Image (cartoon, rainbow, N blue to C red; front, top):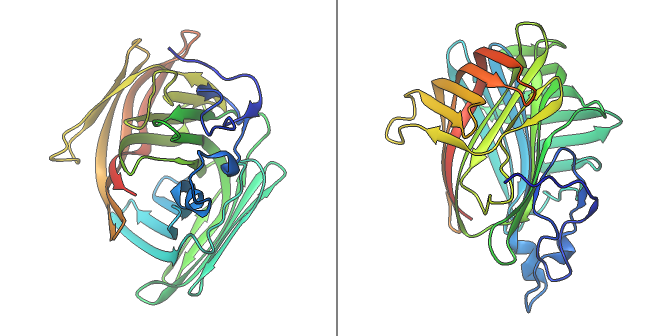
Length: 344
């Protein structure tokens, strides 16, 4: 079952439960954190929230990501850069107490983020049909600075995948995934400068808000690139979090239009994540092999917060079939696939 939400309204009822469950191609529901399930002590509600804006920019030979997150009792900002040619990675993370400096807007379509802590600054600005990312991290790697200025173009016509997912009584996940946003600008480190050029670099956004169970597990796969005829191709697959009986987030995007899929099987070896992964859907419309060439491990242990993640970067090959029967050959599409376990 894939229930599509088509009617605007509040995300949560006054009792803190989801008013609608399912997927949409645009963010139609109004997220109001004041409606989360009440507790006897109101400030505790704020500590239960999990919110983040995760941006990723993919070029042919490099990848750059910048994130600001508020997990209630901690605020976080992190960035990482991967050089596919080496391959090699550089990353940095900073944490604030009680989500300080990491306040995020209620909507994915309006509002800015301005995170500043210990010299690092990440600013995400939403303009008319644009998103501007500015990062200054004076001691990013080996006490050397990083500066990034990236402009992402988001036409009003572009569609996304939006999910309203139950994760148990008074627990929910509301998120939007955007793929294939044309990117331009640069990422500059002490020893090199990476240029994002229109027509060559594409960005994606994972915008998430919700109240999650303390222990969670998920798989996520994503890619943004180009077909042989120049059209953009985006991929978003996921499983493992919440009750997906109303809908999954599985889909692909052709030139900004969402093509919805049902259930997708993730077949991989958890003892060796560098082995090829296989993805197939329940209707014979998706058959992809993902061959990793780089692993980004993510291990955080900060008392109440503990995560273990394996984000694999590699290339997708195979075939997609649109709802109209059109076939799309996928040949060397760069993206990622991950397994993540969290206690947060």
